[in-house]
Image 1 (tube, helix red, strand yellow):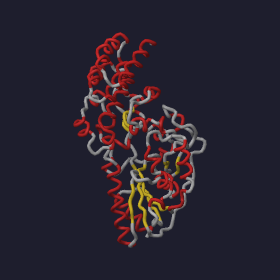
Image 2 (cartoon, rainbow, N blue to C red):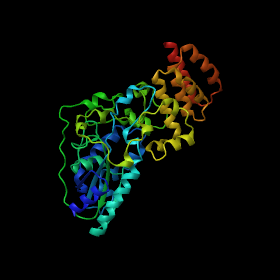
Image 3 (cartoon, rainbow, N blue to C red):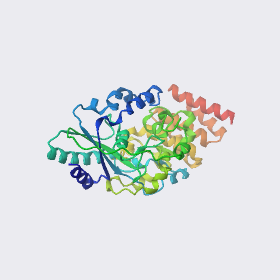
Image 4 (tube, one colour):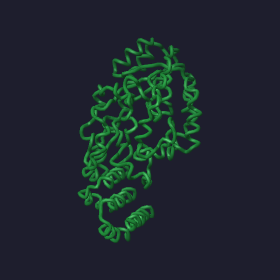
Length: 374
């Protein structure tokens, strides 16, 4: 049965297949509890709401006897860190430069699960990220890799670049052995983090993480992180990219997960022009679409403010009248960085008086005070 599952998984495009018992992550609930107690999850309230089910697969489905963990490689074709030097362009996380992996992986999981159910007669369920399943601890317990000091999964075969999915089954299958930690004395992933999101090795404060700030966080990005974000407009790959184990990584082979050329280093000037219909069209099929146009343009404006590109001023100024207060606030900050103090003061006189949103007024006041200090 194990060989049959492995063959079927490989046939649909999975690069690694391992099996783990449901109770193999007994330490994970305590770590999750500490993470939540420290409020490291920020505004991701769903993590606390699903903590009990997340920490114990048997709580999610009492009949599960074995969990098949599958990984699909999405190794990038180019160095993800190279775009950070191109300040007039945006950096989008590698995983989001292609088709939404949830759809791709889940479709393939269903194919394998269907074959398994037909062969074994046992009930199956498939999960990809959106369900309360702790994929990384399960994958480590199954021997796919280990959770590095940055808390992400690292594989000796694929480095940092694996999408994970799971098949829960009522069938009894022999389990694999867990992978050991191969991080050693290396701390490159901790050192490179622009916002110092790791209070200690193997601990992540999501509230400081650029992926959280640009994707999960719905309000204005806190001022203390805006410069550090640079031109990262959706997610961050710094801690993944710098891992030495990536020397063994391979380029993605699944065509649906190949990087779209237009998403590898898009021009900020073009992205600043996106209204909602244009945003939805441009990011059709991409994970970026789920955060919505306003949050995305907020991110682009932060990148614009960090770019030093005076040519972006007209595009930023046009967004001072945007229907979204979130966008207007970010535009103020961008212009405070791109305009000379006198020009910004004139801009403030023109627009602040007609503003009604208190958060946006606060942005005008904060930007004006910062300009006075400079």
